[in-house]
Image 1 (spheres, rainbow, N blue to C red):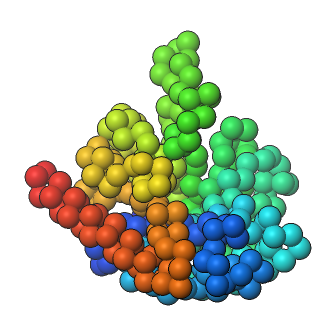
Image 2: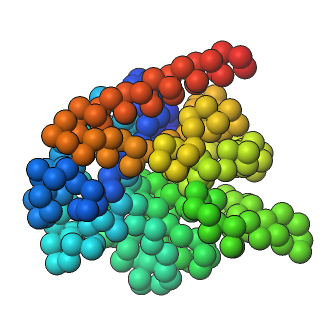
Length: 275
């Protein structure tokens, strides 16, 4: 079974296409945990234990570990080991460089830390992405149209030849790898763009941040982004992991994850039945 087929099977088996984002900000941890590095591990372990039933993927944001200094990658590795083996593990590292630097980044996340996928910035072109694609049994998750307001600054610029910069990124990068190896980051804050994106990339998977705290909704994303194989990993971070700041934060995270999972089931079933 290919990576693509395996992910589709996992989604159908669990009835969910939820990706839980692990962004453990020490300033937002429940007070009783404290702010020491062990608090990060305790927090992440509780979130994972309470949400694993509803998720098919976890996205670990490296920024919230690298800020911790010399122990950062040790802590990242410890959290990585907590992720259930049947969930897709995405290292949200947003790397992008050329030559040996790119190769080292790819080996770091795919070989050293055994991640399934890593987010990569395409700004420097194909030779900054190729080292990740050379690991053919892993996913490269390419930034395409992000959820932040600054995406207007470059990604949405119009080209003299027609179209916008993010569209050119899609057209070019699709030549580099097939749908079993390359997926794209597209923010839920651009729901009106999903049909246009599908016209370019077909049924490739999209990792979709921005649902919840950033204002995106499952219904809006699915309305134009859903494929016959679902084709979506909807990521939610803050609205799940910070659903409560009290001792019940695990239960609150579970309730938030379950609610999103239920929305996904209802919306996906309704839309696929109409096709």
